[in-house]
Image (cartoon, rainbow, N blue to C red):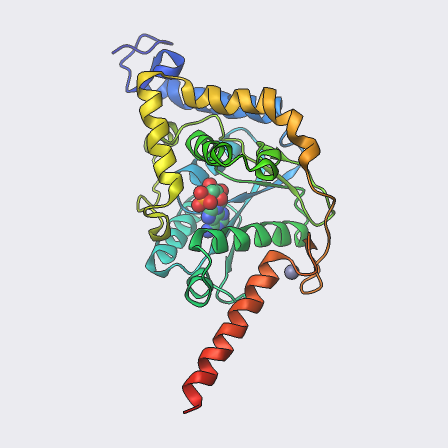
Length: 309
Ligand code: AMP
Ligand code: ZN
């Protein structure tokens, strides 16, 4: 297999691009893809400071590396979520990456902040991924706002976005579809812009990128995601991709270009202020404060049950 660019020995085959790459040509190819997504959707201005959500997984570590290589001013944000030993391992990978490259990293422990994901799932009937998503969104906004970052970048890749789109379309979740875009602009001074510069890169591409760049990431999947519907959707989309290369990208990109602009009027009214924490909210209390309150009351009931005969 020959590299389509230089004719050297190719190690990566991208059927969607009808191209093969050697490692020296693949790395700049990924950089160009990401740079193109950033400029097409005006995700990040050159002089802006970007807070990069880094989980310790391949996508977000690749993203951080790529943004640095492209010359953006980045700071990593790692949330230690409190999902058993999985969280400890992901914190270790993130800290090691930042330390080896002398990069600024903010690490926040959700347990120390008052509510870890494990407790949220133990004390409520909510699916773990929903509680985890609520907490992540809250801290991305809060920490970016408090530290003066205008934009948060996450490592969501093509497979994530295609699976999410399929899930949303299967149920015609119009409100979710109206917000599924690689750039979410700020609708409140405490809601910073959210961007997904990796949305055109597949999981395979980000894994290959990490391998060639010598990036050590956590391979283990989050224990809460085992059996998750999203994994099933990814599996179905991979089957489609195998028989029809380029399907995933077409599904996502055509949605963004053609359908998504027509859904923007579905968007709800602008947020108000949460009475619990002062962050923006669509109800009296934001979803994180509602979660906190639910856990506190169930914990109280459990403790009272233990004391009373
Ligand atoms: P996930 O929601 O786990 O699919 O992750 C999507 C993206 O959210 C990742 O690529 C990261 O950019 C970000 N992210 C996930 N987990 C964390 C975490 N523990 N700390 C910081 N960012 C995270
Ligand atoms: Zn709140």
